[in-house]
Image (cartoon, rainbow, N blue to C red; front, top):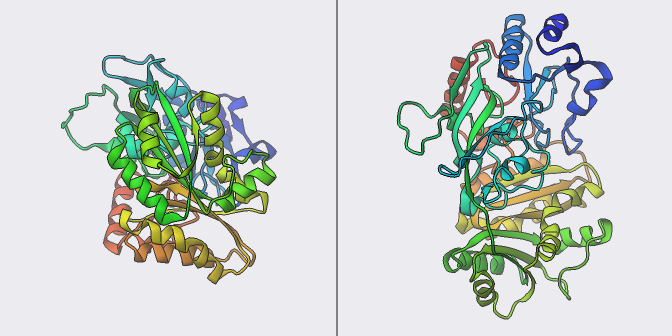
Length: 440
C-alpha cells in the first residue's frame, strides 16, 4: 500500500510514524488517534488516484483540511489513513463581474477573503487563518456574520469533488441561476467528508465593508442581550454581527490572556454589535441608548473589542481539556438556553467550569465545559437533551463528528438516519470515507 501511495504523490508526501502526530489530534486535544499514514496530494488527479487505491485495498480514509475541527470529525480515531488537502492551495483570480472566485480545498478562508481588494468572503470565523475552504464547506462553517451572509453553504456556487472510487465530478461555472439537476455541492456542505472529497470550490464574494463600527455593550443578562440584538436586526440596516458572552469568560481572558477590560465596570452579559455604512455609528448609538458601551471605529479599536469575543474559545482550555458543544434553538427560546446552560451542567457535574458565548441573532450558544468529574457523556446528555426539547439543533456549526454521534437520534429520526445511510451507500458503497462519522 505505501509504495503505491508514494508512487502517486511522491515519497516525501507520505508521512508515517511520528510524522503523523500533528494530524492525529484535534484542536481541543480531546480527540486523539493514530493514522495509518498521512498522504498529502498536490492536485485533484492525485486525490483521485489515492482514493481509488484506498478503496480497492479496503483502507478507510479521513479527509482533513486545516485540522481546526472541534468534534473529532477529522481525526483518525480508528487508525484510518489521513488525506491532508492543504497542498491544494491554488487560488484563482476573482471575477469582479460575478463577484466570485475559485479556490482549492487547501486555501485558507483568510486567503479566499483577500482574493480581491474590493470583495470579501461572507464567512468570518476565529480560525480563518488556518481553517481551509474544503474543511469549512465539509462542516458548513458559520461564524460571526451568518445573520448577514449565511453559513458556508450559502457562499457556494459550484464544487469539484472526488468520489471514493476516484471519479471526479466538477461544476464550477458559477451561474447564480442553475436548475440543471441535483445541487450536489449543497449536499456535500456539512457532510463531514463522508460522501466525497472536496478539491475545489466556486465561492460567492460580497462587497468589502468600508465603514465598520463596533460597539460592545454591558447588559443585565441574556434577556436584555436578546432584546437588543433583535432590535438591532430590525433597526440597523448595515448590521453584520451580534455576539454574546458573559463576565465569566471575560474574567478568564483578562486574568489569563492579558486582555484589557473593555468597560469600566463588570456586567453580567455582553453584546458585541458590528455594522457597516455611513450611518453605522449613529444607528448603534441610538440602539444602545444609555447602556454602558465601548465604541470601536478604527481597526485597532475594533480589534481590541473583537478580541474579547474571538479569544473565548481559548478560555476554558486554560483550566483543562474542554468539551465543546455548539447548539442552537428557535429565536424565541434563546434566552432559556443562554440562562440554563451553566445550570444544566452544574446539576450534572457540580464544580465543572462553564464558559458560554455565541451568536445571538441566529439562536446559537457555544457551551464550553471543563469537567470536574469524569467526562462520561453526562455533560453532553444534559445540554443536548435540553436543546432537543426546545426544538433546537445539537450541532449548530461544528458538525456531528465523534463527539455527538451518540446523540444524533435527538435531532434526526430513524427515517432520516436511514436516508443518510442510503445516500452514503450510493456514493461510497465500499465505506471508504470517514466511516465512523454519521450513520452508515
